[in-house]
Length: 279
Image 1 (cartoon, rainbow, N blue to C red):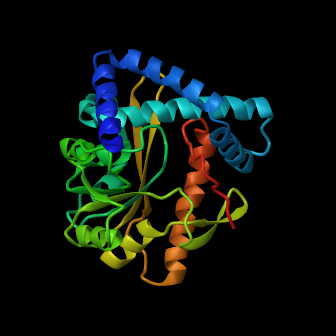
Image 2: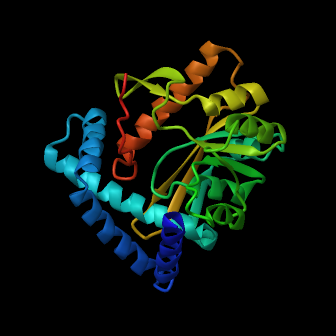
């Protein structure tokens, strides 16, 4: 009963928000984000710690400003995930010809993405250029229509809560699907250096490149001041990662080196509230 009520409430909120213009929805999301991050003490402290680890040279006021803006952007992005299919004309994709040829080689590709602006904008932008696209997501059981959102946006999704989800990803890759994975969160897969600090990271994108022998790419979206999304697609490894631990680890580190550069360039677009720098 609790999940049913929550699901209905979410549907009502989404329905109500879609009655407003997109500009008005952004204003509402930014206001909501500012309120939530101000009253959510634990979330705020975790996020501030992550910003301090990544950008220790900033003052407390500068960190506060980055936190507020990044959280506002993420709240808006999370809401926009519920109407992805309506955003086709709100994105500009930047991808050089070589990367585009790798993406459209019909053999598939492995793409690492980040928790920036609209989380699912990366796979959505990719499917504008090629198909099929498969992503991985923890789909809450109480959001009954969650998978329909991906289906409507022409994205195949594998539920991370399901059994053998990584084997399903590998199978999708072997069926020539482009695999897009959030790769900036903490995991025990491999030890990497991130902003001059040792931590753990997921190596799924590198493993899929190695096992399926497909190019390794990187994709991230930036919400512009005019409300449009600029989505960047880049090449990490034009061939494929070699299937040994050293090369997989090195490829993951290369991804994280690029993540650092992106975060430094767009600090108010990246948001991660959990302890990112665990040993």
